Image (cartoon, rainbow, N blue to C red; front, side, top):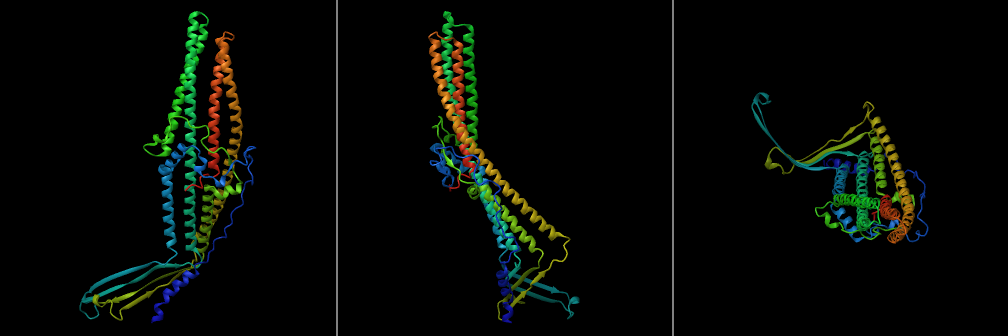
Length: 472
């Protein structure tokens, strides 16, 4: 009798031992569908000074301390990132639920039953009372995973959890880049506002000068109207810049996500270099190893690969075990007396014979989803490659354009000084002085915009390279 008592535990142990078989295809990472090197390279003279992307984190990339403080506040409070972190917890819990199916479930059970049988239903012809009491451990239906169905479902849940984790890292990188870009946009608006204020003061002084000259007959009504028009144009530009400044501040407040977000914003523009100016992008293969959205796509591909193993296992028999071991008695007081031991063991096997093509359709579906995941993975690599190449091209060309715009703005300022001196000395007419004012303002405003665009492009490069992986 003792040997029978260990039959079902022995079979359960055997099932755990044999549960290592898997019918999932051997996973092999698809080949990279992009070139090994980027189409655009770092400009000459910066390759040795550039920071390698693999060594970069957002604290290193952000040079300005006020901007670094705003980014940290966004990481601590942004609601979109908080939701993504909760998605990780949900995926982790789902994986634990699926993983639990790989182990037997034991339950402690206690039951009691008292029954009266009427005399006309009793063999003795008189009514009877019967009682049954039972306590013990029960093994709920446990599948011996001979063909890896449960294991592959658990592996698929694990890969989905890892994909969610990488997706959250991608959300974090995007948030960092968005805060940086919004800050740079606001900083550029602050610089333009200061420029417009200076220009307005200059044009008001010029308008006053023309007005005085008009009174003494040395300036015409046309000169006055032209000076007046330029003044009003500067006033309109100031209002436009103020609107851009307020809207960019609102965007930053949303990203930071706190009630006191305004305390993180500065009243004056920062230094001209708010972020790291040179980044070495490495190779496309390094990008595949570190960019979160590519890693998330690969984890989803592995999950679909495991689904094929589970679908294949459905064609094979399924063996399940159910049993219990404990004590039974007709009297509650005798429940734990000698000889009250009881056990039951109920193995079952299910062999698929006809399911209307369901198993074949499920396998086909799993294979199609795997192929779709391969295409999505390759597409994510191609998208990442293009984003990095575009960002490299932008930073390279904007660097050279900024240098040219800076020289042009300096030349316009010198031309404005000369035109002003010649006009006040009576050598040139007012029209040439006005043209010099327009050119100087336009060139200086364009320089501010190009400088902002270049730093925004650096933030885009940081994001495209999967930046921030070194941050915890």
